[in-house]
Image (cartoon, rainbow, N blue to C red; front, top):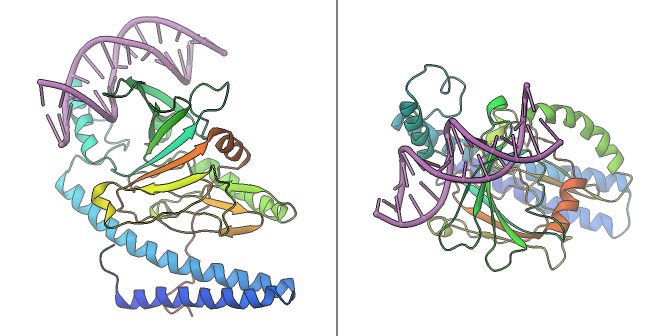
Length: 333
DNA sequence: CTGATTTGACCACG
DNA sequence: CGTGGTCAAATCAG
């Protein structure tokens, strides 16, 4: 995101400023133990404010992204990968097909998300991350003691889901696995429509109990390119849950952010290179975008499997899009 | 029988 | 030319 229109910039600042002020008001409300209703209203306003600011930033990012993708397509006419029309139809020689396949790799998303997980006793291999993967290859990696396994989404052919990952046992600690996700799951949209309905029920339910729930947004084609990354406002992680961003050198100068959060969504980016997740802590939702769509970085997370397993299994991987408020305009306030 | 995994070969990229 | 990523035939498992 290199240039931001000054009007948009001001709006973002306005949004964030308002969020801050509302937060302060909420703080004042909380301590005199005022009515819950007032607190709830303020929380809604705060969230709305941040949501709008972030949505705006996302829109800007999308525009940037779109222009980049367009340029890429113009540059490489064969770059429409993974579409039904580009595969299967128009039969040509096997050699030609393979050549096309390898051409495709050039424009695959550079974005990846790397997760380091610790294997749990008695468990062979990395933890289940909630998706269905099919192994399609294994490779000995130079300098690595253990081979790297390559997985792609089971629904690659049935639903055109291009998500892939590779898993490699760590050299230093064989109980650790480095999992590198590439591409975002597009196979979950149908399921998520249903889950989104369920979510409304869950949301009500969650107001009556304390716990952790996670929802991965359902995506509409447009919303898919809205980057979103979420973490609880108040870290609930223990010391052994360390999360950090590591950047590829080229991006390091652009993106210097380090934070701690308890979870990294396995839902990874597709050709839009985005990661998206929402997590709910108790009955408080926070949705925060950390990642610019064009960012080309690797996200490394160290999470003990025991934790990820319990979290990922207990949390619902449904999808809940970062919805742009239809009424939202630049002069929203 | 069907779907998943294995494994050798092929290809792009640096 | 070496390495990493992917393909696809062969094989395995439920």
